[in-house]
Length: 497
Ligand code: AMP
Image (tube, rainbow, N blue to C red; front, side, top):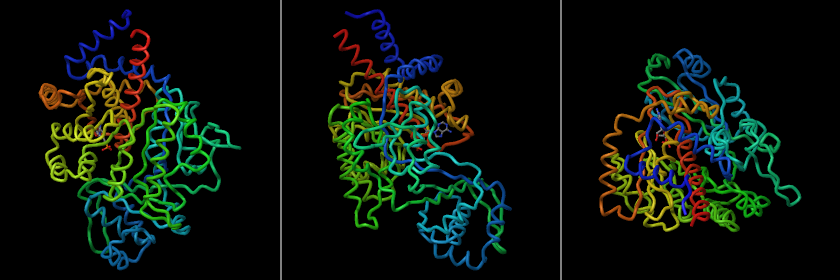
């Protein structure tokens, strides 16, 4: 028998199924209702966090001051050599000027060298903040009332630990005398762990400076990232803690895994990417050993096709949920053998193609339950018809994601739940009408008879204060919303048949 709440819920479902997307006026209250339920959810996060040190070049004089430390001829010669690794300060300045001249983004690894590191440390950074998916997601979720976030990252230096929110629900797992303990990150750091720091050099459009006689004007705003890749950093869970993964699996409802893009092809001790991918698969089995928790893989941009294929072939077949952006799904489909279709997605950016690519993923991987893709203009997810959530409910989870992203873009960061009011005020972007039609047609098409499609337009902020980590914010918000709603559904089903 249904109780009053269930009937109210059913009415809600019917309304949401008929109208695409949640009613914008109700967005904030519905989001708060959804977030209130997060207090029953615990999540495990692994593997990547780092510190981002950001320097903004506000005018050309600042670039010239930096250039003055070097011999102009040497800079020009080095620019011609186009170093692919930063081995010295001149390699850096050469690549920075190159990047500024073209206005294109670049990320270059820095070799491990103490004096070079010290040189970079002497630069005055405008801002330092937590980076890496685990870093970004754990700080976000700690504000959203989750019961417990167990955030693991292989390295935990003092500085890194201090960048995690000091919140009672955000904990780092440690093993002492064979026992599992959960501690605040700032109480769990290891003195000997190196710091993974990405130095980010951002510049505006039309920044003007001279390199010797040559005047350079930046054609676009963009950034150069000097990425540290300490050899000691291995994307894995150490033996002691690995043994405790079944125990961790028992005390959480779900896990978000990310950071595989940081696996190198080979390490100084001869270990290679195959070794770490194999271990990553074992971690998932161990987490699920005692309880069938939902596992989300957050895909990231991966330059190496070899590594991307290894992740697609070995990790995707082990997870329940997959999140990524449009370029990433095209890249995933590419290594699955759909090269032409992948190019079409990248070229045309059509919703129909993104939905179809998601369907390919669900068809080829029975283990996958939900595929979520975000683009600048919308957030969508696809799952099978027998999913317990209705399309309207799925859209509520996606709407939460748009509010989180909109808030972060508008304010630069989310400091508390109240901030989400700002995100909820941002209207859906102007393509809402077209999206409604496309989704309505897709839902009617026989091709999707066995699927549920949910889509919510993004709440686009015109001049965002920050775009760093928006994708991770969207995916983790939508996934936790999904797990939370699913949990309620299962409890209700068990109670009322
Ligand atoms: P990613 O490509 O994974 O970093 O994800 C970026 C996502 O952030 C996009 O797909 C959009 O949904 C969202 N986003 C980017 N810029 C804005 C903006 N200015 N306002 C609101 N959302 C944005």
